Image 1: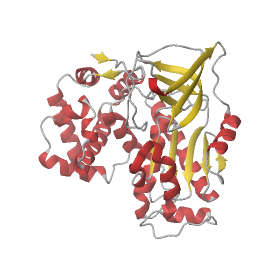
Image 2: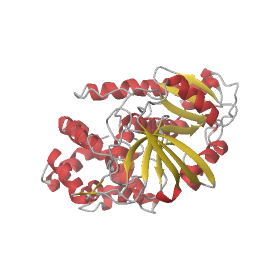
Image 3: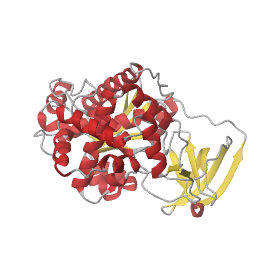
Length: 389
């Protein structure tokens, strides 16, 4: 069973958040004035979702999704002009106007890397994104699914330091911006991060005069493993939401979204560029999963797929256990049930935005794809993972 919620609730619009409202097929170009944070803002775009209480989810021409509460709306008009997203040059112009002074844009075949740090670091990020892009589409093509490539360039914003990044991300992340080194925003459809060559523990001082060799040397050392993984992880989310694999604000199970991103993220620090392969064993999550197996509940698989609560526990240990099991389950299903896995993800990719699934519906979809006997599947899963090294 699936349900629609009548109203819209204000929440941080990042990867882990889903809002639920009634879907509306309105195609007209809308002009909405809202008052938010003591400022009047004009939003022009197409309505994606409209709630019965007057709340609206609207996509503007930059691809940003605005969740507008009824009480925020000051004025609203519409006409019959067709909705058209900005082209690449228009996007660049508006990005530079929106971001703090000093930002530049490095372009690649599929990305706009907005940065105010060193050019070699922006180039390193762009090169990493392009390798992921090619690998991502090849991965699914080799499994029989030709994904639709994005029509517009994907946007990554790279700040010079953690302080300026946290200040900019505060509206979306709040205090979490102080501890999260990068994220994909469902609202803006952008990856946000800062120059990680100056991150604590890497032992190098950041410099705008950094060379490509200097950047590669920093990010190929073992201490950089998690930072490189985070860049790939968040960029994987961005790709998934821009090629038809997942729909922004659809009820995408977190065990799949996060487990799949971890599956793609594993760095290869023997390579001077930091990453080149998809699907390597996660040397962080595998030990966490093995530790979890010591007292893993019998219903662990069921609780993982039924809802997302395990990923939102206050305990860091419990959240890490959920992420570790999510990676392990994706790893197992991709290898042992590759056709069924692709078919399952295709079912999820057809979900309407902002419609919440009940637990029973999620479980039924999983069973229909893989096995009605979850106990038998769970036993097979555990046997498989015990052999992974």
